[in-house]
Length: 271
Image 1 (cartoon, rainbow, N blue to C red):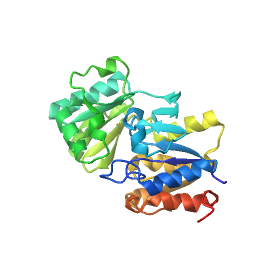
Image 2 (cartoon, rainbow, N blue to C red):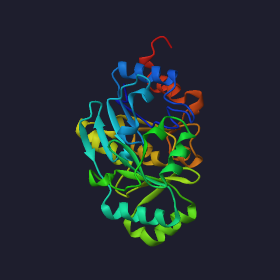
Image 3 (cartoon, one colour):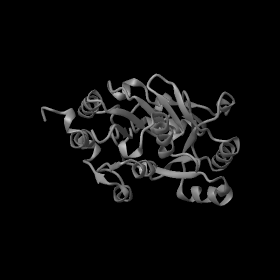
């Protein structure tokens, strides 16, 4: 097979908005591809603790590229790569969001901890499905980072709030990547899904040309650009589609299942 590793985003790529987990057709297709000898890696903005097995509907990725590339692990939890936020980066976000009451949460090993406006953050995720709300813990005591530093953050913040933060703290190089009109992943400049993938490929002794990757969001752009075949979902923003090598059907149409059959026909001998 031309591609030896299939990397897929989770939310909006294999899990439709409002659904609890991967759809059955997509799960079956991913399992078929893996059974044919292709390795699977999920590359997601979620931290590993926010991706329990139930959400994967029986799919067992060989590798996890989580927290937007800052956390890379094997299926068994062996850490291959990690990059955490600095105290200066974390405290700048806390100070800014507290001033204007913007909900703010950080991604840690065991899940998300909302340091600012925890109740509002939990209420939002309770409305979007996928069990995320149950993984957003009340962290308003602001002490979880004393155990270990977070990988990245996400916030409900206005575009004006983002602009104001960058005017004051732009020297930190934090990137605000939208996944909803007023919700952003907040990622250090040195972090990205492509960075996590590069770390994984180094461990595997594999070339990026042997990778097929699929995603739907702004945080997938660098991943799609790095892969030998970068595919955007039909529901992806036009900018993401324009930068991809190809576009597959919408997540609501089980686009990844169709993509698997196109890229790996050997895995589906019966059509």
